[in-house]
Image 1 (tube, rainbow over the protein chains, first blue to last red):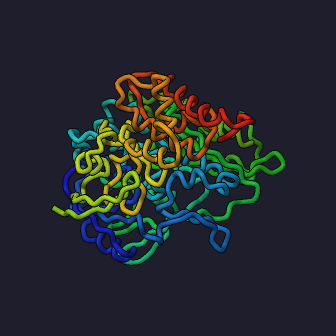
Image 2 (cartoon, rainbow over the protein chains, first blue to last red; image 1 turned 90 degrees about the vertical axis):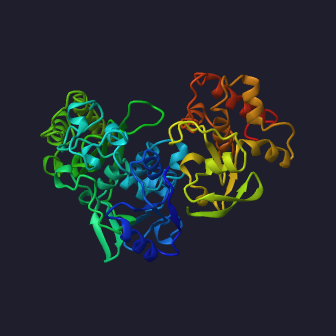
Image 3 (cartoon, rainbow over the protein chains, first blue to last red; image 1 turned 135 degrees about the vertical axis):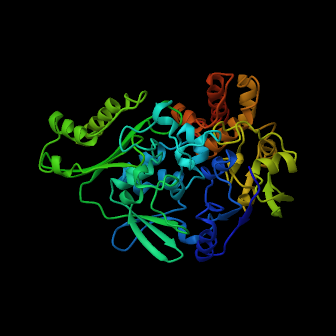
Length: 327
Length: 171
């Protein structure tokens, strides 16, 4: 790891101003749990000269209910805290199931929600310091014609990364919003709109986070009565891994028909792939026919690369299983 | 080079070390404090050989900046037996005894991290299921044993801690 200076700011404002100085050229970066950033720095994919430690900022801490019945998840809530939260486990298992599925116990005890949402791609060309790929400002996506077993079947091009976050699809299925504080003030963005496709540019980022902005927390709005939810993730090895494909699903059934449904997919696209399934499901029962329609809609436009065709039937199967579980 | 004096609590002792900002906890433990029981395996969060306990939770020392450990209690493998003795026990920690008795090692490189992950589990949950044991050790890779003796060792440590309870329940 290259040398850097570590700044431990006294408050959020100081952190934002410090980050804003060197965010554009990535000479300043923020660290909370550090479970992704330190691996990037060790592989020389990130080489900041100043690292701003935001782990101690009280504004980013905690999980709790707010006045209107929303749940606020601080950006520094650890994945283990989310996984172990009794109220979330009872009411919103989609969140605890997603958290449980992430990495190893050691990483979950330190990794933060903010870091999970903002982690960089796992594509092995991106992670290989020898490969100057599109995501690093190069001109070639080596995955497009190369070893693309883990890459995107939806929304790809010119880069074919998949977004590695498990929390993001789960939170998007609950209509969560992310709150950012930056040098020019605060703003709130629907988490579904926080992520960008490579075709939206710039290639070196996966989100709309602007220079100097720090994710402070995520707000989960009050959910419709009777909501049931799940996060199903298929991974190559049982112990710990990123998703080959995952399905985050939240539904409300009423008298045998669907009243509310929201779905987002992980592991298949450069961003959490959110599908508007309300139209094909509202007022209809969950059966083989309607589930097949949902899967058709979700995979509309899916295009397999040479080595990732398996993701199409895998995703269809996961969607069917998620509906089976909740209906 | 940005450098500072870092005050850490390691195995019950307060120690001051001079370390550059970019040093990880693992580098400070091994190269400043000579505590080489924490292993530098992959050094990027995959293998778990560097697992230490921070406030009782297993964390990867290779992915923890030393300065972020300030104010927290760090336990390395070197501290496990002294802590057991301070708590009134005899011999090594029951987890260490069980790994020894079960031959739960070959090259030994993963063993300190394995034993600390097991210790954290048993402190939290004295009588875990086999599935919980596997889950707790899922971030520690072993390339020699095939894991069977390691899981047996944790179950042996549980049995040793619970055998004297009249109902066979938790200690």
